[in-house]
Image (tube, rainbow, N blue to C red; front, side, top):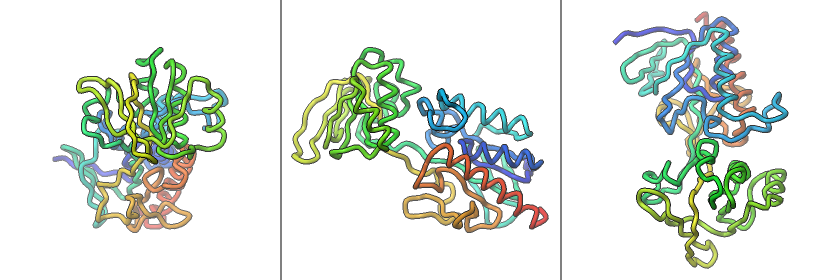
Length: 316
């Protein structure tokens, strides 16, 4: 197995990783980005924005921009300044000594510094036939699958900004969108709540949880349970979009990098430094408070600057 060495190796390619790549590339550090695999649910190249609807709150795009297009622009900008990419999944890491070591399926890399930006993944309902119905009526990506439900009745599970954004976007295609939330009010921001409430195509199922998915080869409907009374009822929908949150992709770093009980990596306050000198973390993998594209990009900038200064101080 051949081994190649890099000054900066970035694991992950969402807003944080690509911003880190832009900044380290402009610092002539020739960053090498292992961006993940398109078929993976845990390290999707481009991160969660590849599965996101229209982005209206990223500065510089007053008319909005689709998530995949925004990430494509990030990637092109990083490449322009000299970043190189490998579209594979990291299988193992060793940060016990420098140079650090990283393996994919059949390749080994060493690096003077590491920037971890592996992001987070969508949480699922964990129902028996959920996995087999993904892509057959069940989805976590309105942008990918909304078109297939034109003029049909569908449902979205969740109560935060992501769920409301998904529901609002899906009204472009569906005849009706029901937002299912296990509580009596939304957790989403006021502007998102107001927008959903004003949309005549969106209805709400309060104090309700999806407890069963009907169908084997394709979704035939769902069963709801009232979280107050326990009463169950059938609901006919052609599609179900799950938007109930995320968990950080930190399995690679268990026992290696310090992390919270929830799995989020711990960084030193006001910086991107992890517990291992020379290893930095940025984006949703260490942010359980804001989890926005703009804050991920900002923390990617922080990681790049921290990394550059650390390398200079350590003559690496």
